[in-house]
Image 1 (tube, rainbow over the protein chains, first blue to last red):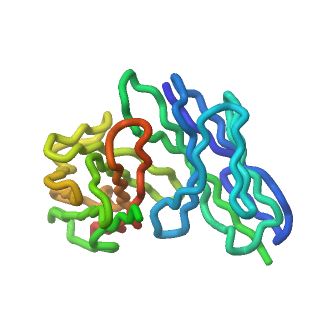
Image 2: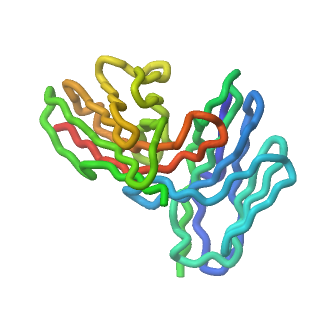
Image 3: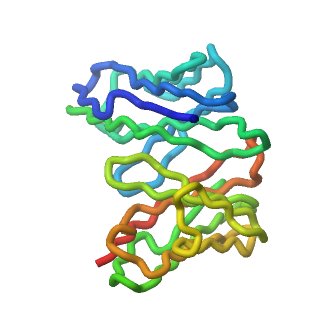
Length: 113
Length: 117
């Protein structure tokens, strides 16, 4: 069964304290791995898509990396405005063309000033 | 570009009533739309996939007769929660994509908070 697991469930950082969020996946053929940011009471906001092992993408203080079994979202020198829930999702091969996503449970990040 | 809206953003209803939630793609044609529900501190669970002009495909465990989905145009899909009960209270999020193929990105709406009293 295709599955996505994120850790930790919650993370509290001091402003400027860098860290990483983990997304482990088991899927029958990965088409793409997605990272989203979700603020309370809002829909997910797209951050990155990674397609193959070894790929890396960066945006401001965020950097996403991908291996054959997991992805990391590295946060460098975070600021309070980076506080949010970060969701990981995978798009799998289902024997046909589909863009269905399977989401992990997310990591709730709190950055304290 | 690629903006998705939902209406209403919040709705409170009495147990036994039906509630309709709209999902619109504002600046693109959405051949495929997805409906998710999210419980507090939980992730998004896909409920169904709808393609314009055809019947929705529901995920295992989702009651088709309870969650009616209509995707009548390329810019609008609706989710009707029929005979709502308190356990249906949740955050409902839709997403839209230009097609159902794997290369088509999903664009998410802002969500609708449903509270059933």
